[in-house]
Length: 393
Image (cartoon, rainbow, N blue to C red; front, side):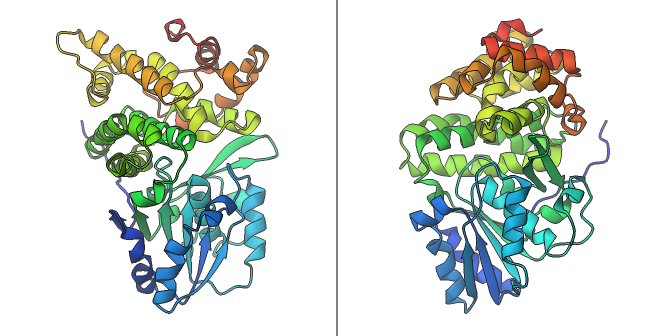
């Protein structure tokens, strides 16, 4: 039975090698006279920022750059940047970087038209007014933030990651140019690439998945799984980088419409309390959560196995579905993702508290294909601590 659903994407999505050069023309269409590029210091130091500022300046647009975004940004980082640009007459913002820079840009755009404490916007549909126009340009193939209407930040009050969710966080334009990702180092390529795979798998098996999101998510799994190893270990392989960029984009579209589930819910406390990078936390937990979820939708997980390139001919549906878990664990291992929670500093004594925090994230848990309570969440964490997929039932 098909129930009512909504499918949202940015107004314009531009892809392809060299597509970043179109940022000036797109900014003009948005009425830009004075633009601000939002990025981080590491990226700015590489010189990639000029790939954006030059096309803008060629269109007669005045451009400023602020590179104060920090990794896994807390709300204080957003507030500090907002204060520094207060009173400026920017009419277009351009986010350049990984998910952190893109999420900060989203937040700044709405903060300029929704005065007050940004924390009041945490949750779903709390943003009343559309923000100023903004363009997002990812330089990693992972978060898909350029096509989602989420922005995730750490709340220092309780060390938990929290999200602002609103259609007003969709950019006016998303530009995905794989050439911008070539210089990303192997470890970051691995973590962000696996993060995109998490988005695709979770949204494909999510409770809110639809026929529209299913097709996009499955193709994302195919693209990422066939090219992630090459992108990590042969970074100049532009064909692999293009696969990863498009896979991340498609996974982001699926994520933005179908949502994600328990992997993200369990990853948020790891990021908040142990400062584990979001992509690493998601990637580490994915095989364990998949093992728990697989029984809830054998057909879909068998399809995931096929999309991962596994040969399931002659296997029972259950065995085909289980192959997806094995293949995902192997891919994660191949690209160097930590295999257990103990590898990222978690102790056995921490697990109960982690489970309690994750159990509060109903927005994600309610979208998971299999029901779970704090008890089941703790069992998944313990399996991830021990490195035993077989321990999850």
